[in-house]
Image (cartoon, rainbow, N blue to C red; front, side, top):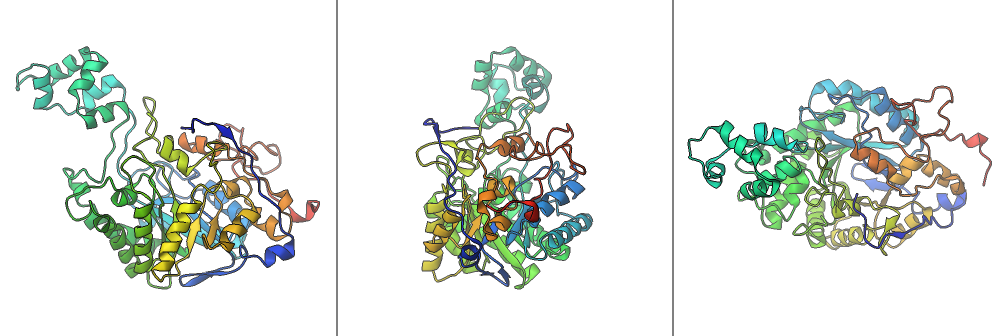
Length: 490
């Protein structure tokens, strides 16, 4: 993963922990209206992909254990991982593109309800993504994958009717430099980084048809989420995926869905309206989108301010802000691996580590999120705004809420490090919190599509009865339990 050149080492500083009475009287642990329902307090566990589903997208016991463990900490809201809305192969990621996925999702909902005593509201993040392929072996690329055209033949000085096999052989015989000069930009990308579809590939019929297809796909997925018992859905409009790509300033589609801000936000609004119409006003619908893309030519905070106001005006029940995480500046993958959108500078902005620049990894998205919230309020809307990014202490969270910079605090890596953060702090025992060190150990596992765990707990009590482990037996699959009665009070 990319790191800032300054390489300054930052330490976690949670600040003073509250007493139980102080926590009870705090803004963080005060209720909040979220559309048709009420959150018991203002804590939120954002979507994180744990890589525990089956290869065909079904809920497993390991998936249920993962969410049950978060629910045991009793956050006010928990968002289930990015879940595919199409019924297409997508590896060990959850899917919701067919009714056959409902039994597993229903089991997941029941497990969370029981583990949280009914305290935790449960949402599911709905995602669409386009095709991306692994970086190919060069010989395979030239022998099988490259589409040979007249342009290639002309560049090689071969007649237009030269056999395709002969053209491929000639290309393979050239040096890397000579081959690169013959390939166009997209062909070079496919060779050096792997093939990737874009929303601007209008020559592909299924890409051109996305504005017609996606509203119904998202709406039917949301209806399934409601049937499964979820309290609402989070529409995934962030990072490197389809809906974020429509919002991107790089989207220059000529069909009325690209170019100007008004055109770029058009499909996300149409998707939202289709979801709302299909699920009703008594079902929570919000979205996660980017405060900034953090790539050259990409969307800026000014875009996010406009989008946030548009989403609030349309009636979304919450807005959750992230940043970066794009394919455009991702590191070149190894042969046989796919590009990972969190390995470049924009990826760092999404998941900064303790090795950082002077700004550091804590609250890096706070000011942009506050600007979006201010714009939403200036437009006359009370839509709650969720801020995330390196927040690990009560004092930090309380100060953000007191200053009116956000309405809900998201704890992602900190909740992974200690799912009981919420129970411990509410009980006046914040000193017992297992603090995330922001080493991005979990992110490295995610990049390799391995079961995501935390280095602070995945080797704790491995030999204890009933502990479930990864296939190699070296890591726990869930955080150790916290027994409030057996822990000495701080």
